[in-house]
Length: 271
Image 1 (tube, rainbow, N blue to C red):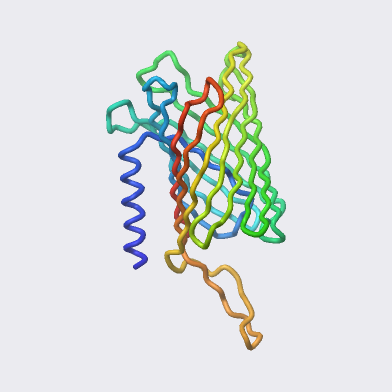
Image 2: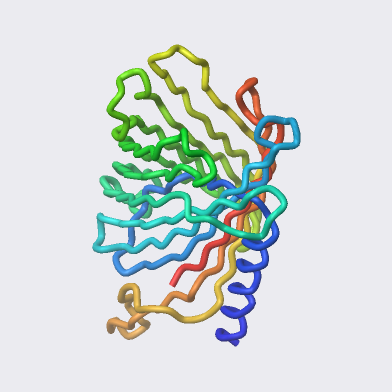
C-alpha cells in the first residue's frame, strides 16, 4: 500500500512539473524536528505582466531536521520557455531554520531563518547577469484551538552585483491564517510580497493575497519519534506515519507590478 501511494505521489508531481509553469510560494514554519526529512514541490501559474506572457519556473526542495533546533534545506529551480516542454536549470538555494521557541510546547513558535540563493541568467539573454541574494529574518507562529497564524519577515539584499546602481535591498514577507476543518482539510488566507528599493528608484513592490485549501494524509509508518508511557507505566515507542501534504490556492495582485491572478500549489512528502 505504501509503495503504491509513493508511486502515485511521484506520478502526480511529475505530471504537474510537465504540465504547468510555476513559481515557489510558501510560508516557512518555525518548528524543527530531529530526523524529519521532507521532499517538496512548490509552484504557481501566473500571467506575469497580465499580457499573456507566462512565467515558467519550478522548484523542488529537500529539507532535513539535523537536530532539535536546526533544519537545513536545499532547493533547485527550473525554467520552461513559452510553448515548449524543455526545462533549463535556473536557480539554486540553500536555507537554514534555527528554532528558538518550539510551537509544540504551548502553541507559540519562533525561529530565525536565513537563505542564500543564486539565479542564473537565461542563455538567450546575454545582457543579463547572474544574481545572488542573501535573506535573513524571523518566523513566528501561534496555534490555538483549530487556528494557525504564521508570519515570515526577511531582509533581502543583492550580494552579486559589483555595480552600486544595480544593487538592491528590501523586505520580503509572507503570512498564513488558517482554520483546520478536520483531520485532513483546512482553509485559510495567505499573502506574499516584497518591497525592493533599487538605487535607480524604480518601483518594484509586489503584493498578493488570496484563499488556500490545505490537505494532509498519513500514508504509513516512518521513524520512531518519541517514547510514551503505556498502561503499565513502561516506555512504549510511538511511531508516526509518512505524511502527504498538498496546498492549492488563488492569489490576487494588489499593485501594478503584481500579476492580477496567481494559482499556487505545493506538494510535500514527509518521511
